[in-house]
Image (cartoon, rainbow, N blue to C red; front, side, top):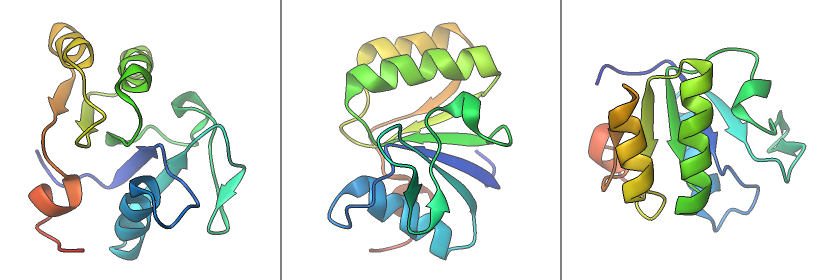
Length: 124
């Protein structure tokens, strides 16, 4: 996978103890164009938070899921509809159904790995 420039973090959270905040904040601090996606919050850390992928102002190069597996299953369907071809399922957000859906629909799916640690090589 090439280094993405625009990343949507589905499950971003204002709660600093949650992985949704930690992933979002780390990517933001590293200078990525990162878009928080969570229908429960209007903003996170002063940045607009989007209700869904279709509400984003741009198509992301990568969608990172930090949500329960049943939500990831819906997110990958939305990715197909929007023509998003790369999804990274953070540990605990993946499911066989979501992985198989990606395979069947030409979406590059990464799972069983943390984007920050395993792809970027950054430590917490």
